[in-house]
Amino acid sequence: MVFGIASCRKENYRETGGKGAPKVTRVRYLSKTDTIANVSHPVNLDSANVYDDVKVVPFDSTVTQGRLNTQYGIVGENLLNTTKVLVNGTEVYFNPALVTDNLIIFAISGDVPFGPSQSNKLTVITTQGQVDYDFGIMQPPPSITSFTPLAAGTGDVVTITGKVLGGATSVKFDDVEAAIIGTPTDTEIKVTVPAGVVQAYIYVTTAGGTSKSAAAFGFKSLIYDEALQNGWGNYDGYGSTRNFKSTDHPKRGTFAISTTVDNGYGALQIGYGGATLNAKTAGFTALKFSIYGGAGIKDGDKVRVVINGQYGDNASVVVTMKAGAYTDYTIPLSQLGDPGAITEFVMQTQGTAAPATFYVDDLGFI
Image (cartoon, rainbow, N blue to C red; front, side, top):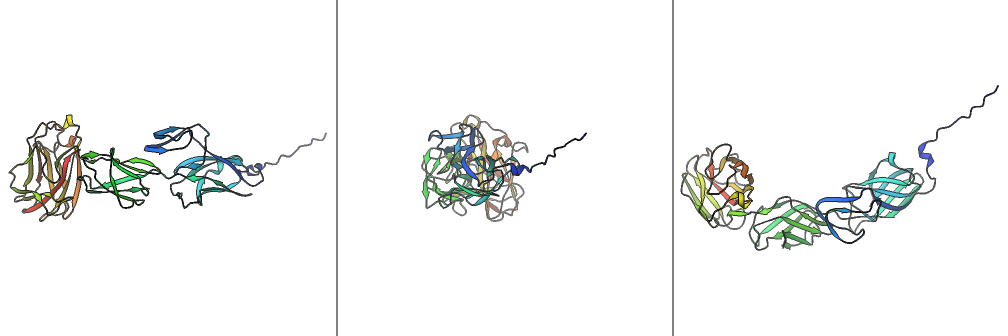
């Protein structure tokens, strides 16, 4: 008896795909939503609506532009033997294990270039050839990293730093338009503070969308900017001399408070006697100020910050000064005794060698 056994040769998986040159028919979304937090995105899918946070799009939708740091699918033919995927000439990641003859899943990294000078081409290279496909990269929304100063008066200049700020068309303090100075760069915009702004978030608009600053500019209630505000007055105590119109070291504008202490525990003491100022009902969450180490102050010298005379370690905060420079502080009111009605503010030196002078500017509640 003779048995015949047919042999079976295992084919290389990569050889089962199409043999011709690659072809791209479209690029599609991989998710039903397109989400970037705290940004309004102009889109042109089913409509030209501007939306906040989440836009629900039809699953498997075809797209002609992509966003940085987002995954998409390339649909086509003869894609199985793909070796490289490039966007605007920059190689991007794809997982070969997930590639089929008709689909490549790829990710657009944050370093892919965008803008009018780019080719706006998606390139797929396989062992059988390459294909270019029209596919642009949308300008990402602006990113606000910081702004200085933290507070300023009408007409003062505020510098906003971040990423993708070039071409900014609008800067607003909440809903109040600010005047842009000069030409914004990719990392910096200068604006002047519009009239009437006490505290506001900053919004920057570019072709990529509108972004909001993480922190608010300014104060809910000022104690001092160029002068003591209504209801606040000088207290004469703690062995110190205070000048509320000092021109020596203003952080901005013309004036700052200078306090010259004649003993190691001299202090700046300011009392409040105006209409009731209640931190809880007014919604204050923190005290914000800037402090400068002047003559006689060494790096690391300290002051204790006190509200309403609560000097305990659990109800006051010690901060350090830097000689010859301003340091900005934001102290949660929960660390300052969680006050209700505000009656007094004190900054008391902690063993500083006298005489010594420190300066305070941009003081108030946020």
